[in-house]
Length: 252
Length: 291
Image (cartoon, rainbow over all chains, first blue to last red; front, side, top):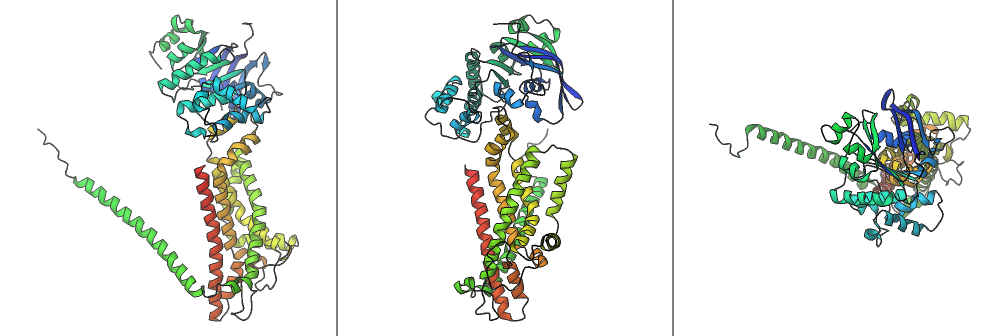
């Protein structure tokens, strides 16, 4: 693995809502087939930063970017880049499970079908559901409405839906914040499996979760990247006093 | 030592409960009086007109002789009018709503447009009639044709359709759109595959209520000069026509008592059409909420 070339690289990135900077001069490399966790107190800009990585901020009025996000070295926000193309390669799982009000099968099959991905849709849905560790629970009722699933199952369905697109990177915005501990543990187990194939960026305000699952951790406070490093180092030997205070639970 | 409180109701709570009870009965009284007035109206009309509503009434043209008079040309004219109006107003209204909710940037200009659409919905129908007369009948030379009437009616109900469709589209949670966008969907794919299907029951209900309004409107049709005595059926959009409310208006304007009863018969037919359309709206809403 070429460590010198991150798959995504934020360089001096600032993101503003109107005139207020929510993210300030953040430089953050995202390494391929690793899990990078972004932690920090509520409102520190971690979700804003995450959404900028697949251009989901485009839908929010008045958001502006300065600095760069490089995808394999080329500018994600360049004039000639179609944001739809970016989102094909960089998928996303949201904080609150948001399945389509359609069948389980259609939820997973819709993305590949509109993008004309090759191959048998049934096989693709099965693979994605297996990768998301949901297949055994739903294989006999693929035509049921996704809304009948439990919260944890819905979130795994949303993960399967993202996986079916075979993206290179999956962004997860606090995917477990609305789930119970059992469902959370299942999704965390899943992450270990997924990182063999995918690059994952996960935003979480649960520090134990970041420590458990991630390879690299970025600590954000008030939009400023306080510290970034290997997860072990950030949690056991933080370089910055603020990081230490946060990871030991003294604030936030 | 404070005495231990028992569970007897305090004076203040009893007052609050009295207010709550009063409000409940007040609401019941208001609802009951509305239903009662409607009931009296219906009774009056049905008792006046039911004898006249029969097959002969439905299949005859208007006549000087009440016993030979019928509502065929008005009934068919209304069907023509409402179909053409639907054809013109539904696509325009729904597409305008989609544009305003899903595509238009939220700026002063679109805000200005939205405020004006809301204002248009409150403009008296006769004003639309004047506009239709000047623009469609005279300027475009469409004369007193069904199409001129339908275009006028479309203008009248367009704001209602746009507002209803906008509300229905706005009620779709953003998380649904984001989920689709995150899968690499274009805006049209998001709108057509997810937003519109989810908003459809609300949009359809709005459309049917707007069309029901078009069926009952009289003033703009009188303004554009729809005929009051028509002994033929329109065969193309360019033909002259009459409509149920016009026929009813015409009969009530006659001095003879029998024609007033005929008018009541016409109202029963008109109410029947409205009832069918509203039932359709309720059914669509019910089916939409189930799936």
